[in-house]
Length: 465
Picture 1 (cartoon, helix red, strand yellow):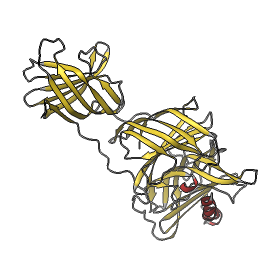
Picture 2 (tube, one colour):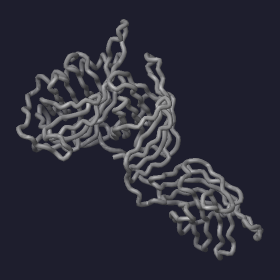
Picture 3 (tube, rainbow, N blue to C red):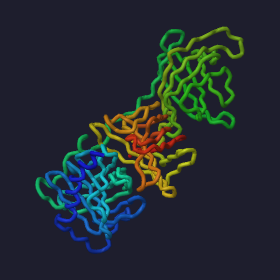
């Protein structure tokens, strides 16, 4: 753990800052904000225990903000945010090292440095240069090296979650009190993601079907809800699909006669005299959103008269479409489930934060089951697309998907995905709703701990802020 030792001297400077910075006296009175945090307050959840700073110091030096709080027991929580402004900060980067240190072990802090296995995000939601105050949120996983009792070393982790700092006054040491601009290197959100427009393409007996109208709706067929999709061209010919809303991503065969629960495609002539259905064919959904309503598919089929009375045969080939059959769907409650070595994992808290990383924006999903003291986390790029993606144990280039399992928060190392598969079944960019699944083997990527955990049946529906 060379990185931990190299960075201990840097974090020791931050700890010293807690003792030698200009004192900020606690505010008088009980000023309570809407989220329950006192004005001037600095609080967090540390491995499930409530942390509240009794003394707080904050300094802005040439654009870098140092914020530190010490609780009544002498434990210290420190955040560093370079190019401070109303931005999101990746605490795993060397430019934003943050830490938690126990009162009885000041020389060995838990640090958020990514190369040591840490991670985290802080958000400055309000930066007031006139009154010199900051407000925001944070969470991070800190890592430190400890003796294993056998002459060697191992690592310990601490999970800092639900962190809030509210209207903290800061001292200007040098430079300007104005906030720094938000940019990919120091903060900021994701790229300008846009959902594709509805589109339809197909060849009818080798000729392009140029649609003038393409619509989707939910209809009732008996007691079944069915998605009806219709493409119409200028002469009035129609290509239609009748799809179950429970299908999901995958390939499904077409059938010739619709019974309310199967998949059928059809071609209807402009005069309506020929209504031919799919005697042979299939449809493949690469995106299928149960909440978003987004559908993306390819298809082909042979259309014939299911009664045999009309000998006409129409070949529909090279078909593809994108459509949203729930265009007014909004955000949704966050849902996350999984199995750990066959046992159900249902988190009691789900936290989603964004962090900049090498010009990209990462989505960090941290879940905690307070009853079992376990945590499952996922990190993926905000511009991820629908489909299957291999998982990795570390974020290196910014396009990796990483799963993390902590079997005993505060008393265990982090076990990371190697290998694993992360599947996005639907992602609606305009409101941040993403649906998908995951499965991975959680191991110690450094090879120090031989334990391995199987994370299976992972499923999520999340609204990315």
